Image 1 (cartoon, rainbow, N blue to C red):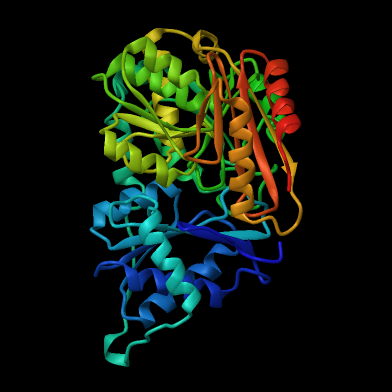
Image 2 (image 1 turned 30 degrees about the vertical axis):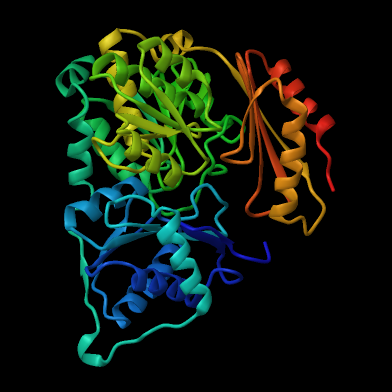
Length: 452
């Protein structure tokens, strides 16, 4: 990549090329200039370059008069909890999520302990591009302190959402694949508090990944046999900053990320007071079917965690998430949270007295297909909108939604077409009862798309 991958809530880049200490300081001091008074919580996901970026960010923020709290290696959802617990002005998680090891990134959190939404994020981005930093004199330089209790509050919040004693009695054996990311710290503590015997893979949070970090079926192939051979009840696989969770059943079958939120929603609606559910518009309609079964409203946001949280707050949702394995439980925090997923799935296995495979097989079954359509170099957002307008006119008999690209719905299928923020492509995501039907929807889009 010749340029930073940058959005209203954060940025990613290759260390030493597009992401440097100078960029990190400019970006985070721009964030501080837009934030309310108070300290900032700084965390990182364990990549070797995270410590270097953290040092630069602490120094930059201290040099503009801000106090900083160093929480070291921590999961992204833990950052959100810490911000609220400490009454901080915001937080910064240093992570490139599922990108390869040469990448790192910066994710911005508001004082509410959530990824900053579009309006303040846009203001930060504009200030960053202006490049002006207001340094303070020697007597106003901020201080850096260490956070002594990093995971304790987050652990308590997750435990409070499940029947701890009932789970302990089951004595589950669980394989946790943290892939040398940040998830092992709280993940191991949580599972042990729940009375589980833990088989830990990649427990050292040093960012030296043992397999490609995104927890997809293709990347987790080496883990499947380990789950089966370990004779565990369930396998849990996290991405490096532990905001996403994929599930493997006791037979080594990849249940996947799309099922994580659906599992959680089904269990929460079965066990808690009923209420609205929010997912993004590219998440599986499994969750929609579950909401309909329990008679609760389901709302869909544009893609992006901040958009999901915005709509959850607006609708008073009791649960939400994104289909890439990111459940959001407002009783714990307003951040995608793999630990919420693990606890809710174990609670469901305990309550229903069923294996995770049996629980998965009870969920509505759909197949998702994801494809890309290459666009001419230099294609503008306006040109993409024109393409979407023309495409929508060819599907007037179906429900068309333009809140995020173009989503076209059929009774038991849908297809979403949206432009990439980082490369000249259209992403096409289709879901139907069978893979063949989903592929056919993607091909139907290709056949009707007019690329200028």
